[in-house]
Image (cartoon, rainbow, N blue to C red; front, side, top):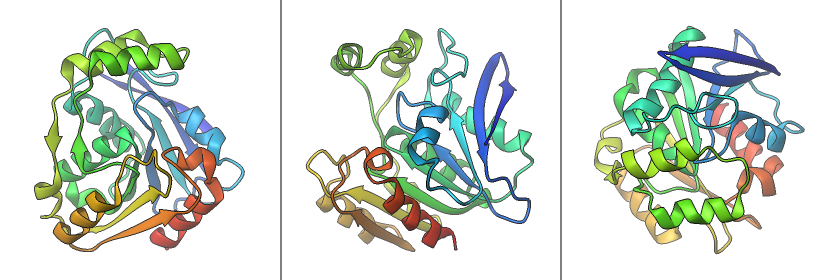
Length: 228
C-alpha cells in the first residue's frame, strides 16, 4: 500500500494505491459520502489481491476540506485529478453508496476510459441531502468535516442517471446487501437491469449496506470475478 497526494487546483487529494502492477487494469474505488480512503482500505486490506486505487474525495480522509466546492462536477474532478496523475487511460470504476453517484457521473462524462462499472448498494441517482441528514451524521459519526456536510446540502441537486447510463455499452455490475438497510432495493435494482444493457446484479447474503465492512471477502470475490 502506498499513500499519495495530488493537487486539484487548490484542493489536495489523498489516495491509496494497493498492489500496483503496470500489467493490470486497476480498479478505481470511490468510498461513501463521509468515508476516506484509509477507512475503506482498512475494511478490505486482509483480502484484496488486485491492483486498485482508493480515493478520498474532497472533505474526506486526509484530503483538503474547502469551505465551498461540493457540486458533483467538483467532486468528480477529484477523480480525474488522480487519473491524470497516474496516467491512466483505461480502468474499472467502483463506487460504494454515495460514491456510486460520483462513479455514475464520471462514467457518463468519460465513457471512453471505463472498462467496467461496479456500483455497490446505491440506485442510479445523485441524491439531494437534507439538514436532517447532517444532524444524523453529527449525532452518530465523529470527525466529519463541517465544510463537507454543509457543502453536500448546499451543492447537492437530485438527478437520475439511468437514461444516460443506458446509452453506455461497457459492462456494469450492481451489488447489494440482502439486509433491510440496503439502499438498493430489489425492485429498484430489477428496474435498473431492465433499462441498462450489459448489466447484472449480485446480492451479498448476510450483509446490509456496509458490505465492505460486513462481508469483505465475499464482495472482493465478486469484484475479482468481474474484472477477470
